[in-house]
Length: 406
Image (cartoon, rainbow, N blue to C red; front, side, top):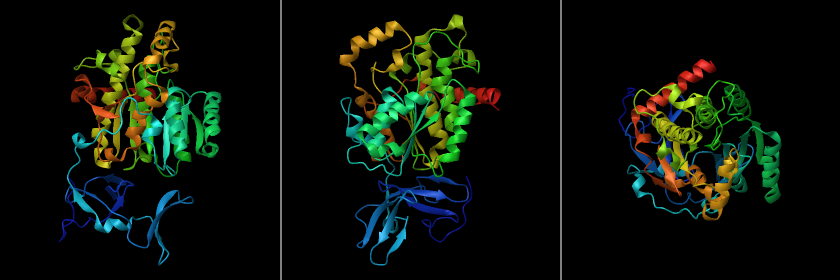
C-alpha cells in the first residue's frame, strides 16, 4: 500500500489525482503521475456516482476536433471536458453483480442491445471482424457511430466487409479501417501492435477478442505451436498485453469463449506446454478447441484480477451453440452438422448480442472477471475458476512469448 499525504479531509484527493465521470455517471479516479485509474477513491476506498440533470445553463456535446464529449456553459461560453455535476457526486454502495437486472436474453439481437446508444468517439478493435459473429459485432457498433478497427488476415475480405457496412450506413465507411493481423504468427501480432500504437492517439474503448479456429487437422504455426492454441489464446494474450498503454478506465475487454470450455481436460496441477500445444499423437481437434476455450476464460479471469485497480473491465462470453459461421469450414462433418441444426440456433445478430452487451452496458461499470451467456452472467466451469490454473496458464504464456518473440 502506498502511503498517502496527510489531509484534514479524507475525501480530499492526494496530489496528482483527479476525478472524471463516465457517460453513465460513475466517478473514476485518475493518477496523472502513474497514468493509472481506478473506480474507488484513493483515500476512502469508496465509489461515487453523479445523478440528475446538468446544472441550468450547461449542455453536453461531442467535439469532433478533440474527439471527446465536452460541456458548455451557455451563459459564460465556458467549455470544459469536466462534468460540472462532479461537484455533487454522492457515494454509492459497492456494486454487486447479483443486483444487475437482466434486460436481454437469448433472443435479443446486437442492435436491440445498442438501441438508443450514441457511440461516436468510441474505438473498437475486433479480431476476426471480416465474417461471422465478428462482422456482425463490427456492423452493429459502426451503425451507432463507433470507429472500428477490423483486425484480420485477408485484405480483400476485410474491404468487402467494410463495403457491406457502408451499404447500410454510408457514413460508417470513414469510421472503419482494416489492419492486417495473422494470429498464427507472433511476428504479425508484433507488427500489428506497432501499427495500432502509431495510429491510435488516445485509447481503445472496446477490445473484442473474437477470432478463433475450430476442427482443424493437426497443424503447427510458424512459431512451432499447435494452431488452435496459438490462434485462439496465445496470440490474443500477447496482443492484449502489448496494447496495455492504450487501455484506461473506459476500456472493456471481451474475450469470446464457449460453453465447450466445460469439457476441457487441462490438469489443475503441473500444467505444461504439451498440455496446451500437444504433439500429433495426442491431438484431437475437438479437445484442442475445448481447451482453447478454457484458456479464454482462464485468461479473462486472471487479467481481470491483475488490472482491476485500473478500472478496466474484462469479461468472457459464450456467443451461442453451433451458430452458423465459417468456424466449421475445416471439416465436412461439422459443416453438415451445423447446416442441420441451423434453424434451431441463434442468428448472427443474436450471437453478437452478448459481446456487445458486455462491451457497452452501463450497468456493468465497475464489474470485471465475469462470464456471460445470453446477455447475463452465469457461473463458468469449476476448472476455469481455479486460481492455480489461471496463474499457471499466465506464466506459461508469458514464457512462450519471451522465448519466441523477445
